[in-house]
Length: 83
Length: 83
Image 1 (cartoon, chains in turn brown, blue):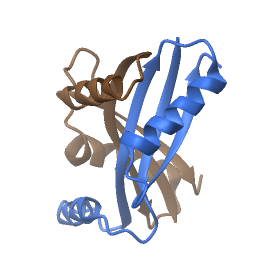
Image 2: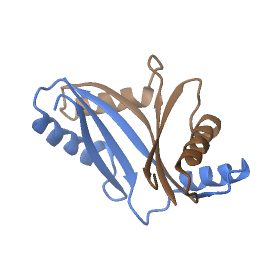
Image 3: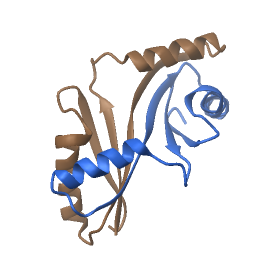
């Protein structure tokens, strides 16, 4: 069994309206030292596999095909267990 | 300047319909070894602060008040720069 985390983040330069909304809300709540907020996805996946190399390859393929939108998002795969 | 990451994840036992939808889509795409998918948020925050202890306290407060829903979600604050 392999456990992995995938981080999906907006590419630099891509507007993040959700992050801006959170930033403004934090300001309203009295947090005046917030300079920037960017919101991405944190995906935890469990794979029935014993081969971390092959798992990483598959997870990168899944990210590219489905989990992230490669036009506007970057992703990073981190194997946390089973390596 | 302090950079921090906040991970917001659904508590154990809380249903994750988005994760289930992704899991099914991966199955349809031919990834038959996916056992579980959970989807959370990955929030990157920059704070105008030089005090990592105080920053962590504030970030935990922000998470509790706004970024996470403490009834169904857990959060974890990680200071990545400025510590």
